[in-house]
Length: 275
Image (cartoon, rainbow, N blue to C red; front, side, top):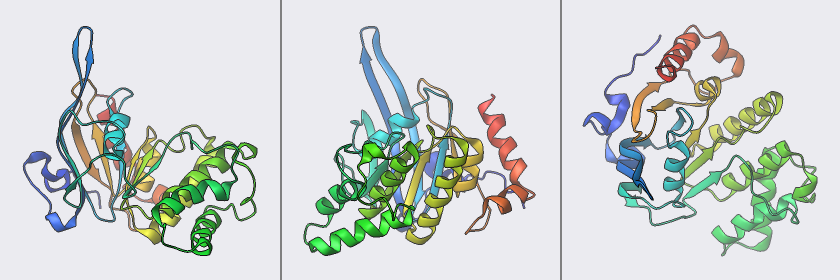
């Protein structure tokens, strides 16, 4: 059954809040300003969003609306101009292992092997684990992304799709509270993109880490998400609409595409983007 957007689904955007013990990530009256020679440029303003524990949220909007700016602020890589971002009620104070990030380009150390790249994060986050235990963690997640035969290949010897698999393994391996994904499949061909979507959601189904993913792909947004968040166009972008996706989990691509509500969801998102 198709569910229309409700005030509750919008979280505290309309003055309604979720129970605090169920909120993992809270963006409260967020603002981002860049000074320019012609005066301040306000990218985001009055942006409010609550994301629940174990929820997968996708974010869509036109280019330049501030999606990546928002994600980089959550990651602690971009200072907040005003407002607050908190994880489990604690304000963020820069980057931290409680937030794992998967970028569009995987940003690997090209001279290191796949295993060494994943171990970089694991060694930092689990310093008291034994060397063998840390290696087991890294190998486990590389195996989960389908790279069991490429542990010792250098990053610059891997295809773009394989490099992104390493990036996914690296992010999950540090056991973050929140997983942030900035168009991680945007540079990949459609076949590889579909394979990595399936890998991502398979691991997420087991790990149940709160996930926030930026995408330009409406179908990807629907397939992966519990809610799709739509941002208004910039400047002064904010949350424009939120669409709950009511498909049961675990999902398959076939079951989503064949569901009676799929095209209703799709039309809702496209109508928003076209206005």
